[in-house]
Length: 98
Image (cartoon, rainbow, N blue to C red; front, side):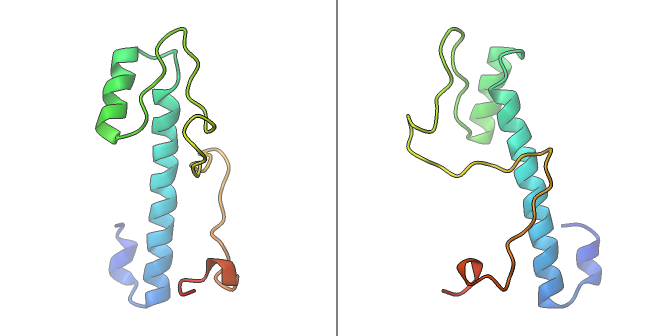
């Protein structure tokens, strides 16, 4: 984690740091996935990156990329260009204990 973790001692502060770090990592994974499926880049490099990150392989040239309908629905990663807000802790749907 970041150096802020050494100063934070309360559980809510540590949780907020972890949430911020998770949001940053999800953004990075979204950028990696976008790179993997961008045909402007070398196919062998995209395949190797997909294999290393355990993300779906890019479509071969001339084939359409797989869609969510082909593999069932899965949650999408957040956009790296739009800021995301964490769910409210007061919202019972997103409470830690159900």
